[in-house]
Every structure is written in structure tokens, then in C-alpha cells.
Image 1 (spheres, helix red, strand yellow):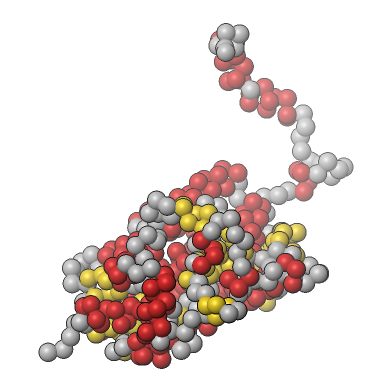
Image 2 (cartoon, rainbow, N blue to C red):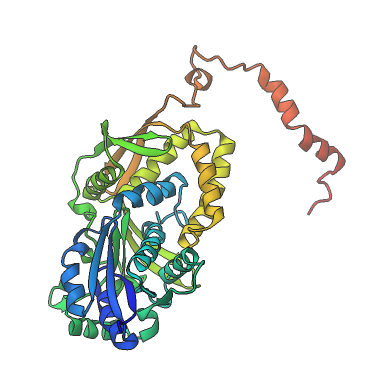
Length: 407
């Protein structure tokens, strides 16, 4: 009789490699690893060999970069999704797609278990579990295994176990350090080691996408980003796919030290965590689209969108991607940004991202109304009547409810 099967979300890192051996030992089931290419870079190198060495029955590698960009990243960008106004949600946006693909793989291979390497006090466990359970709500056959949540090993104990299953640790000087890194096209999240002390400056060895300021070029670089209905479609007047545009921007902006985020973050589980991110392209694109929106949206549209952006960010961060509310907000965003097309010129220099030019055929900025020159067409005489009506309610209240007795 064949064993039951488990689909394991496999990054090739320490936690997921340990999980292959651990699941086989603890559950006596076969493990099939699923590695999803969301722009993971070098983490994809050697994943098949490591998974097989750890005891995987089979290994799957699926390229989902295009789907990730078009159905997740660009939705988040259009929604202005910056958690706590800082974090572009690179990891959080990738999790619902991963949950979706894990469920698809389980159905394809007849697996009754899905596993992930999330810890018991992180956000990703919620994102994975909630996504998997929601997408498989019609059946109770799929069960979830979370080894790192169950085994209770410390990081040092994990390192020892990692050596047992053959994971190569990242060497720094005479000692070995292991950062927990989640990387995709939209950015990378780095945790662990010295980063857990909020007083210590993050060591340079933690970064790999962005240069330190002292090593960046001494000359600025300007880039022009073209948008169509809120979606970036060109870089420096060259039409590019979403994947290629983000890849190029990551390289260009990272070379200028743009994209480092050091954030003391409020996790969903109720603790504060020091999080280090590198998100060069995301920072540039969020900065650019915000400028274009300011030009193309009315004040009321901007205010409503800003409020919804916070709600949307929390939904994504909290693992509630597969909800009707998120879909409802997407529908509003698509409609409100239907005239957000144009070009934005951004200057990159010594870690900074500065918009230095914005233009659009749908711009609400009217030079002849804004100027104080002889070309001014604004009716100044209308101001007196406008102010009289505008202040009417406050003047009426002042007459009836004086402030003389106020304390």
C-alpha cells in the first residue's frame, strides 16, 4: 500500500530542507517538494539536489513570475499597498499565490497533506494556512503540517539539524551566520542573527540587492517610467514586460542604494519584530505612481483611495487575500485609476528616490489656472462670494454658540 503524500513549499533554505527529513520521520509519509519561481534568484540553484538529498520523493519547480507580477504585485502597487506606510509587502503578496499553487499541486498529485516551513510566531503561517483552508474549503481532505511550528527547535538547534541533512550554511568571516531570507521579484525580507537587536546597525553581509551609500555612484541617474491605467509598462521609453521592468529597476535602483528598509513592525500575532527589507523597484514604482495619481485624481478620489490603501495593506499582510473585500477594493481601484496614465521622471541618488517630473494627457493640473503670470485665467473676483458661502456655517455657529465661556 502506497504512503500518503505531502506537498511541501520548498525554498531550498534551512527550514524547508530540514522539513523534508522531519516530515518523513514524524509522519511516515512521502514528501514532494514544490518550489515556486517568483523571481527567487540564486535560491533556485541546487534546490532539486538538496530536496532529493533530504529525502524528497519528487521535486517540482514552477515558474509563476508572470502570474505573480500581473495578478498580485501590480494589484498591490495600484492599491498603494504599503504596510504601516513603509513595507511594500513583497513576501505577503507572494504567499496567496504560493497557497494557490500548493493546493493545485496537492490535487494534481493526490496529496492529502500540505506543509510549509513557517514558525509559530510569524505572519506567514497565517497567510499560508488561511489561504490553503479557504481555497480547499469545499473539502476536508487536505491537512496542514507546519514543522517549524511543531518541532520547537531553536535556531542553533536548526543549524545542527541542517548540517545533518546537508544544507550548506552561509559563511561570514571565521564564523557561520544564517539569515532567514525570503526573496521574490518584489523584494527580499531578511531576519535573524544580529538583526534581532534593534540597536545594532544591520551588517552589510545581510544585504545583497543594494549598495551601501559610500559605494554608490557619485552621479545621479534619472529614469522615466511609463504607466497605463496605473500599471507600469515602460522604462526609459522602452516597452517592457512587468517582470523585465521590475528586474531592471531592481538592478538600477539597487546600484544607487535605493530600497533598504529597517522597520520595527507590528506582526499579526501581537509582537513587534525588527524587519529588514530590500525593495528597490517597489520603492521607485510606489513613489512614481503616487506622483501620477496626484496629477490625475481629484482630491476626493485621493482621500478615499488613501483610506482604502491602509485597509488593503492590512488585508494582504494579515493573509486575507482570498476575501470578497479585497476583490471589492480591487474593483474600485481599477475604476479610479482608469485615467492614471502618463510618465514619471525619477532621480536616483545616494539612496534617495525623488520625482523630478510628471506628465499625463489626463492631468488635472491646469497651468493657466495655477499660474500667477499674465496667462492667469482664474476668476479672482469669484473668491469673495466663495469665501462668504464657505464660512457661512462656522460664522452661524459662532453667533449662536460663542466661545466666551469655553475653557
